[in-house]
Image (cartoon, rainbow, N blue to C red):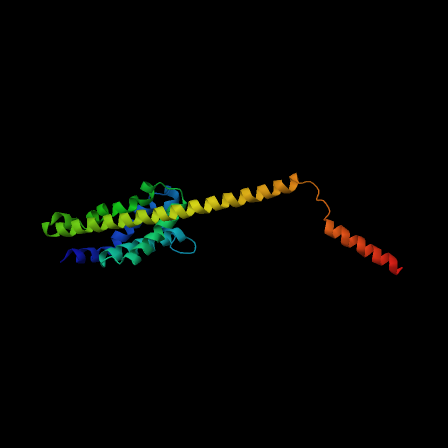
Amino acid sequence: MTFGDLLDARLDAIVERWGDAVLSAYPPDSAALFRAQKDPFANPLGASVRKGTQGVLGAMLNDMDQEELRSHLDEIIRIRAVQQMTPAEALAFVFSLRSIVREVVPEAEADPRFHGDLAEMDRKIDEVALSAFEIYAARREEVSELRINEVKRQVSWVMGKMNRQDDGPEEPNEDLTAKTSTYENVQREDL
C-alpha cells in the first residue's frame, strides 16, 4: 500500500476534520450550525468550506493545478477576508492539515517508508499556504478599495449637498429673463 492509497482510503475523514479546522475560527455556536446545516442555500459558508477543502485536497493529491487550487482556496478565503480576521486567523487552517494527516493516517509517520511522502506533503502544504496568503492579501485589498470608494462617494454627496446650501437661492438666468421679456412683449402686441 502506498501513501497515496492510505490518503485515498481516509480522504473523507481528512476532509471532514479539515473542514472542522476551518470552522474552528468561528464562535462555537456558529461553527456548530455551519457543520450541521448541509443545505448550500441555508448555509453558504459551510458549503464553501466543504467544497473548498475537498477541492484543495484534491488539487494537492493530483499534481496541484495552480488555477484549480487557487479557485478552491478562494472559496474559503474570500469570506474570511471580509470578516476582519487577522491573516493568522484566516490562514491557520492550511497548516492544520499537517497534523490532521498525521492523526488520520498514523501509520504514515510510524513507517519509515512514508517519511519522504510526508515531507512532500508538508512541502505542498507550504505551497498552498503561500497561495492562500496571496489570495487573502488580494481579497483584503479589494475590500479596502470598496470601503475607500464608498467613503469617497459619501463625502462627495455631502459636499454637493453643502455646496447647494451655501449658494443660497439661485439667481435668475439672464438668458431666461431676456427670452421671457421678449415673449411677454410679443404676447402684448398680439392683444
